[in-house]
Image (cartoon, rainbow, N blue to C red; front, side, top):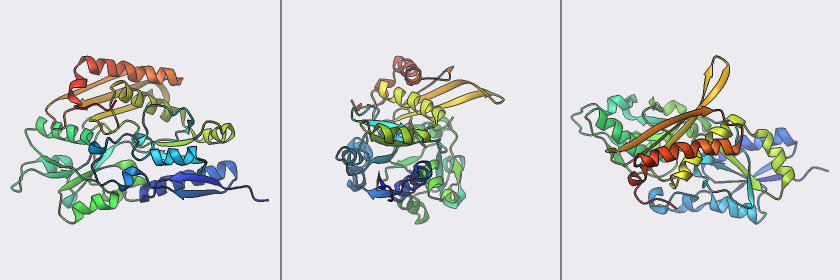
Length: 324
């Protein structure tokens, strides 16, 4: 008799379906069981408000989690940066697979780079689309550091919609996550990869979260085979920083943990964080380095350590209304 199919809960967007499809293939190979995708519409998908207005935190997650708790799906796939930092008592983060490219990228008219966009132009300040206060803060700060100005235009929509603003001439450029474009095979539209020294990504950007009910220990153990310990340590540190700053995923906070190595030997983890006002006039940007975390608690401690330093430098006052 054919074993019952595992039901994977996913958002309906092209990107979410692509991400979930990759995970479904991996789970099929791992378990030998069929996996079917169950499409679920979230509040973040239906609301037309900007993420900063609706709070951001959890808007793409709650409906998936509700389906898990009701037993309508067996496990779910999230973009990790959308996941609230607080753990859910009845769910377990069973796996965080190897991370995709965490960087942000520019999709600009005429193949322009960021430096070309901020250069003086008879057309005036470049209009760059992004719905992210984090991106606005860092892009504006970079332009200011060169004595230039840009106009950040709040946008929403899927990848095709956002790229369309550029191809239709409504905006000079949009900023997107490299991981999303890579996962749907659209990396050809990228005109510039934004160095993390200029724009730090969102905590957890490029990583996926595979979640299932805590009560299903067997499934959790099977899914754990997809976990990448280095990715988990890095994003745990990043999300610990975000939590310690008491900021939601729509706050102007960037973070990235990466591994430092001598040759083939990884010896330390560096965590960088940034908080800024959306106009770029004030940034608090710091980093800390420590041994590669070997436990959840060690990764959490690294994030809290950097958050404490940033708060001491005035980070709280730059975030506006904090999501508590």
